[in-house]
Length: 63
Length: 133
Image (cartoon, rainbow over all chains, first blue to last red; front, side):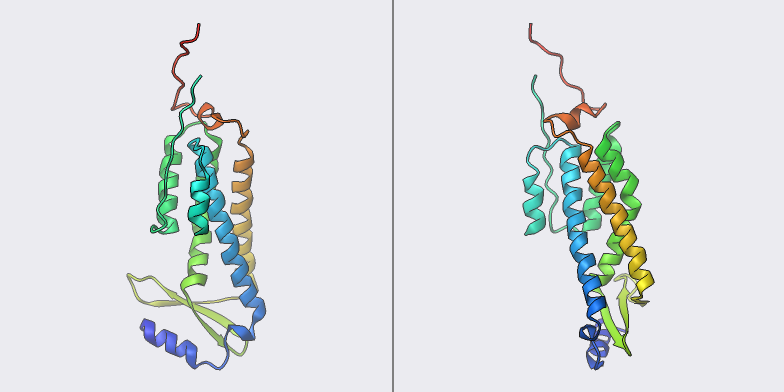
C-alpha cells in the first residue's frame, strides 16, 4: 500500500483518534517525554565533554 | 590551573538516531567517565524508545470499533507494518522510556557541578603539568 493509499484509507474511516482520547493522550505523553529525554541526553553530552556552554544544546532542542 | 573546554554542535538537521551515533562514538573514546558510561549503558533502551517514538510520530492511525492501529514502514522497504496500540504496548514502552529517563537523570546527577569535573573523571585527557612555583 502506498503512502497516499494509506492516508486515504485512514481518512475514509469514520472513527479517528478523537474517538479514543485516552490513546491520544498516551501518544502525546510519550512524544513529550521523548523530547525531555533528548534534551537531557544533550546535557549529558555537555557534561561528558566538559562543555561550559550547554545552553547551545538546549536552544537547539527547543527550536 | 587552566581548564580546557570542548564544544560540539549537533545539527538539528540530523535525525535523533544519527545524533545518538555521534554521542555513543564520543562516549566510547572516554574512559572512567560517569556520563560516558551512562550513555553506553542506556544506549539500547534509548534506541528502542526512539523506534517507538518514530512510529507514533510518523505513523498513520487506523481506528476501528475503538481499536487503534498504527501503520509504519521503513522507507527502504515500503511495506507497511501495522501495530495495535494496546495497553500492553504502551505499558512496555512507557517502562522503557522511564528506565532511560531515570538512567540519564542519574548520570546527570553524578556530575559534581564543579567546572572541569568532566575532565577530571577522564583518563584520556590529562591536565598539563603546573608551571606555578
